[in-house]
Length: 329
Ligand SMILES: NC(=O)c1ccc[n+]([C@@H]2O[C@H](COP(=O)([O-])OP(=O)(O)OC[C@H]3O[C@@H](n4cnc5c(N)ncnc54)[C@H](OP(=O)(O)O)[C@@H]3O)[C@@H](O)[C@H]2O)c1
Image (cartoon, rainbow, N blue to C red):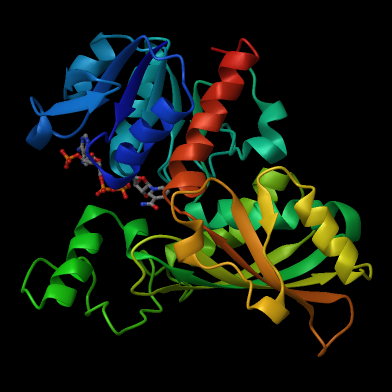
């Protein structure tokens, strides 16, 4: 496979290159792509040096697959140009997620929707992916009515500039700000931009994407997204109201049996998911599983995953692997 990684110099792009190598993705030629600022830089992949090229050059090289993580504007403009020359694009930005003509895929849940005609495929938002990985098996069994989620998101979710802001603050150095306020020793109830309804774009992604991925409009999601000074790994406090009652040990068993989900839940040993444990792992970790005692059929849990891996790079590459395994590319 001739594989273009668009945004190869970014946070997600770097992890993408690592995950491609780790999973022995069948790369015969790598095309690292970034902005004009980075053209000519060298990227090392599996012991070979590759020069970063611009988007125009990359399209002319007609890759089989292009893995995009270079922002929504770049995807909107360039994904169709790759698709036109026969490249299948898997896109990490929010550009195509809610487009009814594009699939929004978490492979463990809905990869079977993919066909040869899907030339631009959307990867869900990082905090959505870890949420639906845990919700899907529970919804199938108990039928969800309503989900209330509050996120505790790391600065790596914003990109290179935000990681530098936190590092600068820790080192006491003045530098460029990714956020309107300091992030160290702080919590910002503000992820992505505000929309007219008073929610942020990140909150609305959490509210809208799960129904599309799970192909079910019968439940609703309400979200509050908060940025905290963690360098990597997003955490979520999740409250789920089901139509049917559940048994806590069965909930743990269902989650544990779900590929890609790991239960870490033992209050006797202070065992619960944390970003430092999830770091560099592909699994979604679930713990603090308990009954909401304030109303019937309602569950509380805590979900953590590495936003750069299952939240972005790993999910994208799993989609690409599915396409190859099923002869769709
Ligand atoms: N971080 C996460 O947890 C996460 C999770 C899921 C999805 N995403 C999405 O993935 C995308 C990238 O996120 P990131 O965190 O990796 O950001 P980042 O660290 O800021 O990296 C951005 C990348 O895009 C490239 N780029 C920017 N403008 C470009 C242009 N006009 N043409 C070509 N390349 C361009 C940059 O190249 P230069 O180095 O040359 O500037 C860099 O390689 C975003 O759409 C984001 O929403 C991020």
